[in-house]
Image (cartoon, rainbow, N blue to C red; front, side, top):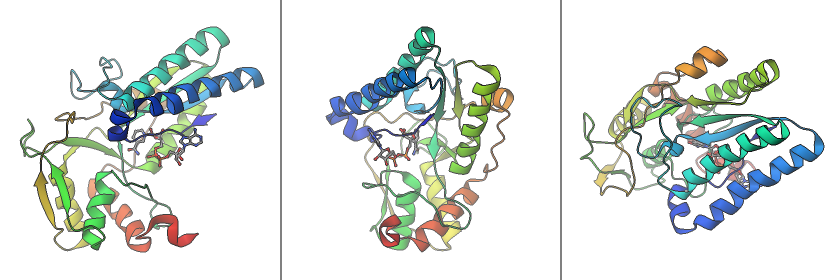
Length: 262
Ligand SMILES: NC(=O)c1ccc[n+]([C@@H]2O[C@H](COP(=O)([O-])OP(=O)(O)OC[C@H]3O[C@@H](n4cnc5c(N)ncnc54)[C@H](O)[C@@H]3O)[C@@H](O)[C@H]2O)c1
């Protein structure tokens, strides 16, 4: 079983926390009940770097203390904890994959991301490049980072997909529950992403610096050594311009996401 479904808007989770604990946390309980009752005993779960909150150390290891600072991250941590108890009681083995910032599309631009509302940086930068948005707002330039903008770790969905296959193989082979960070282990600031996107699209992108958003940590970079050494994960997309180029191919071909394709 691979469990991707969740509500995942951090801002919304702050104003509607019960919606998140209901759908995410209680949803996991319901899934585990059905798995127990039907004898399905292996689960790979989409967790998140949001379980770490403002991390005590960077790069972030799986052993870095988990202290979520929003109900979204808290609900995902609860889901991991419930999985551990379901393992202890029913022998349902689970791998939690803590994704960092997911960005990119398949190389031919046929499959990409389409959220409504879109809150992720890369698609929003590309919407500004397309003129679908007036400009990209970068939230705060006075963080404790080299250029003052938040630093994040970007991971491509194709690399995530291969990690899920490896996690299923790991469960079949080792029969042990575990948790892994999935990030490229390289950090890029918001400004570096906008600069890289300008290179990819070949023109300047309208931009502004806005106020900080509450609860944004300075830097989130994964230590993904464990996924590499234990699962044998080898992310192919370690070049952020390449990741953005794949997203641009998708965005240019599908400016309205899947809406036009239906
Ligand atoms: N995109 C990221 O950067 C990122 C980072 C960390 C973790 N994640 C996690 O990865 C998973 C996928 O993320 P995404 O960005 O594709 O999110 P998404 O919101 O695009 O996809 C989640 C999907 O789950 C569906 N869903 C939600 N609740 C459901 C339910 N009760 N029953 C059936 N379907 C339900 C939603 O309708 C949506 O289609 C989520 O669990 C998310 O928390 C994503």
